[in-house]
Picture (cartoon, rainbow, N blue to C red):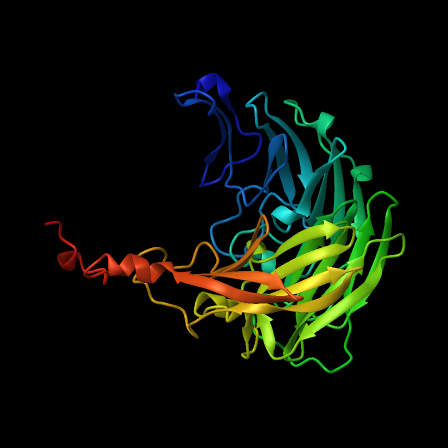
Amino acid sequence: MDYARLYRPVQAVGYGPVVHTVMSCDLSGRGFDCRAIGVVGPSGRNFYVSGSAVYLWVNGQNRRGYGQANPLADANLPAPAVLYRMPLDCSAIGAVKARGAPLDQFSFDERDGTLRVLVRAEGAGESMWSAEVTSGDVGFLRVPVGRFGEEVPTMERTAYRGLPRVAGSTSAMHNRFVGDALLYGAGDGWGGRRNVPAGTTHPVWVYDAGRDRTTQVDVTHSIERIEPMGRDALVVGNEGTGLTFSAVALDEAPAVAGRHTVRNAAQGETRSHGFFYLPSGDRTGMLGLPVTAGGDGGGWQQLRGVSSSVMFLGVEGLRFRDLGALRSGTARAVDDHCVASCADWYGNARPIFWRNRVFALLGYELVEGSLAGGRVRESRRTDFLRTLLNGASDRSGNVFNNLPD
């Protein structure tokens, strides 16, 4: 990176300065022609990539020690932050000064020349466990793309809009933009299921950014996942010992339009790529989600177990229809002795829709199914860890068993 393309810090970098960099490479030729642009600052915990830029939110460097307050923050105000806009074509970087912290990458949305961000007065972005807290005020920030500049202006109070807090004893907050709506709510996250009395409702807050109006939509389950489903939203969470899917129609008056409960089940994969929706028309399509049977539904279990199946639901007018599942051939995760991953970095399960074909990735198993007569049925499968191990005499990890000939 050319030194002239490196921007100086605009906030204290503390004990851990980082060069945040965007690199753009021309892949049309035979060579590898790249250029880069960067900015020096504290380590960042949130970034979002739109169709034109990388947005980086940096709250500054806290004191050494977990969970201690930012010494530069005013106790009566959300923590100060700098929001950078780094164009994908590596043109000039712009920035604005802001307050608060996003929850995760789903807290951002660029639309019609404006970046919209859900911010919280407490929390520290996606650093470990920081995104799991639910306390503190919630706000909505609008930043016109034209405001980002080298002079780093401060966003005015009128750029923020206070939103309802997440209440209750839940441990994790989730949020998602769907079109012009922002949805958020709370669930149990990595913890185990709590004993919640039957009939308990949980609020999903829907903020209509175009109409500047907030609506509370009550569901009968915790909020563990929020996903776009065409122009509407899907909210998934635990209900007793079951897993419930709620379709939220994002009409002028948002409301639950359909629901489906899978008994004695929980999500088998909580990361974002565990869910896919394949639309076939307006409010019509097919979705898939990994599930596991039994257990207390704690999200941490995905790190030690394997999803028992990927279940598929048909969607017709936001009503759900059970299409069946593609199941794993093993009841437990395979210890591959770190051949591919010691910590399952890719997520152990997901549905895959490719053209007119349907697949389920379940750990090291890839199962293909076919949809006929309103049901998904297995047609074939492969276990690619077994295929890998068949070509090696010993993959135990002992270096003396893997010396070259």
